Image (cartoon, rainbow, N blue to C red; front, side, top):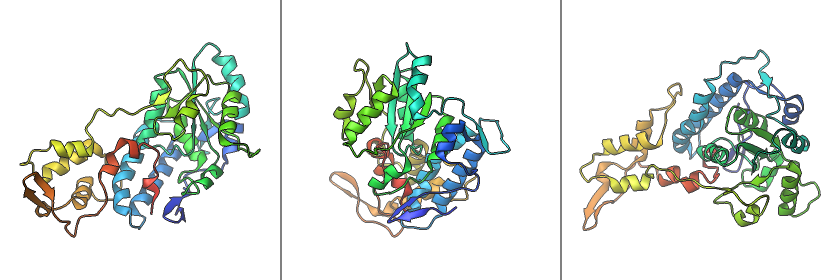
Length: 329
């Protein structure tokens, strides 16, 4: 069950809960992992992340339950069980070469939208992207990169396998179809390759994340009369804004409670310390603060203070911008 490692990154996690089947076989046979197998695999992944030793263990103990908690909650609502660990996907999983024919036959008069994804390992930014797209067009398609695409990135490989990710997103009703993108085997410029794939897909609208460095270039694809930039407008205060709103007489215990309530979710069956205790350990002690003419400030770090920026956990544009912070050793 141990993952592989490239530098500081954890990747290529495997779980005994998943039957042996490749992603191409999944598409050809129209099957996905059954919900109880996906659930068991994600519990294994979460347990590994909150126990695997390394300099980022404290951070993973906070982020992993939030990341995987959503999926665990959702998957427990599915009662279907399978002796083989697999179940039929119908045509929600579709080979890329069959996609345009399917869309033409079934959704000729519907608005269809597509997003190309590299990892899509299920954090709240990905979940929001699926919901956002479904609010704009009635038919949504996600095209996943093959795993070797990650060789161009520092991580070199995703943490969760493509088979597991396809199966996770199969259970999300906000996505209509899932496919896997062909490689750029001709070695043409990336933009030309993806423009060609989009045209071949038969989808009408192309969606792009607002922080994508090639936003303008990608938005040129497809029809232009709908708003296709995936934005995040979280109504809750960020951690930094919450701190700025605190009254001076608020105790550290009250602050910890606010932080936990607003930002974290703890899954009871995990053998890790309580979230509130994790946050207390990560926060400065009361005696670390000093008062000056501008108010209270952090004067020194106690021995219990873990020196990383808590705003990185909550900051939507960083955390939702597909950063890989949770899979760092």
